[in-house]
Amino acid sequence: MIKIPVAEPLLGKEELENVIKAVNSGWISSKGEFIEKFEKEFAKYCGVKYGVSTSNGTTALHLALTALGIKEGDEVIIPDLTFIATANAVTYCGARPVFVDSRPEYWCINPEKIEEKITPRTRAIIPVHLYGHPCDMDVIMDIAKKYGLFVIEDAAEAHGAEYKGKKVGSFGDISCFSFYGNKIITTGEGGMCLTDNEELAERMRILKDHGMNPNKRYWHDVIGFNYRMTNIQAAIGLAQLQKIDKFIEKKRQIARWYENGLKELAEKEMITLHPEMKWAKCVYWMYSILVEDKFGMRRDELMKKLEENGIETRPFFYPMHTMPPYKTNEKFRVSEELARKGINLPSAIFLDEEKVEMITKSIRG
Ligand SMILES: Cc1ncc(COP(=O)(O)O)c(C=O)c1O
Image 1 (tube, helix red, strand yellow):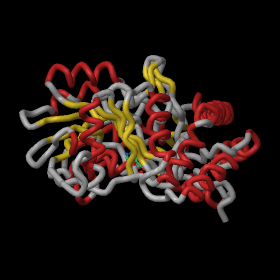
Image 2 (cartoon, protein in one colour):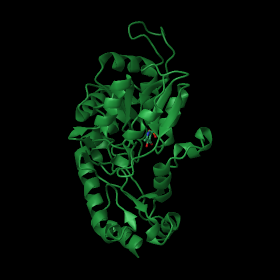
Image 3 (tube, helix red, strand yellow):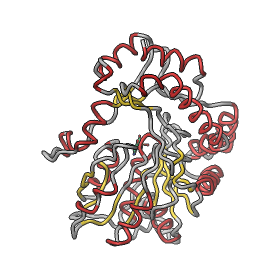
Image 4 (tube, protein in one colour):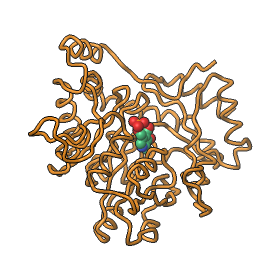
């Protein structure tokens, strides 16, 4: 029986009050006061001008790529180690995701390996701020500038994380967030695209609403989608946003408790702790460790043992190039190793020191 889940949203009376307001107003679909407020406030929080809410993080990515004109025959560079949605959004456009290996020190895309994957067909790079740790954005932005590529940040797992003191989501042409129930803040299902470019924001607003001309109802100049967020979702999101700094502080506190309980294993190189580079503020979306070969027990055996102790964990994502839709024989040494060794540990906001100690004891023992 699972007693400690890997993630659980923290919802309170503020969320409930907002939902009641939305329901009482009758605006329960994709019009209503909360949508614009949530978009504005979230964009402001990230230091970006415009927010365009979506139905989830995957549709946010697809919307962003479509708005940038990514189409059949194009190539988009993404990390080999990410959630499948990053690759699929590229595929939905008829384009091809091109995989790049990870950086061993912080698990995100290795910027030094991007250039060798650029071809005349490359149109964009999607850095993914994996498990709450930012990518090395300066290097990525320089490469993008040099080759004239778009940058779409996949910040689904990293709300509030910072790169050199600046929030992720504020570097690329567009950035995409997810508000799924296990994310830093949630709207149940939901997503958002952020951009400083007014024209891009307008294009995304049109595309997410069936491509309808904003000045001529039921006139469609382009083929769009229904990727709209509901007012109820935005009502929850707005209440969550008021608490985001507290949530992040708590995530970082949980990380310190884990580090404390696992430091001896880390010193003996039996496990590797969740990294945080000097230039980064990691939000530890899911506190993660690598189970090294010296640990004496395989990653999956450890996960099974923890499960028997009522502790839920998750294995790292499988590298994209190993799964049937994207299978290649190319070697990605780092992402393969991370995927083999990585575990996401319980990281819900409600965790206390005692529970984390119980988990680390279980790993140690
Ligand atoms: C890196 C990454 N990108 C995209 C997504 C897709 O978000 P959603 O599940 O809201 O569609 C997720 C999440 O779940 C994710 O982890």
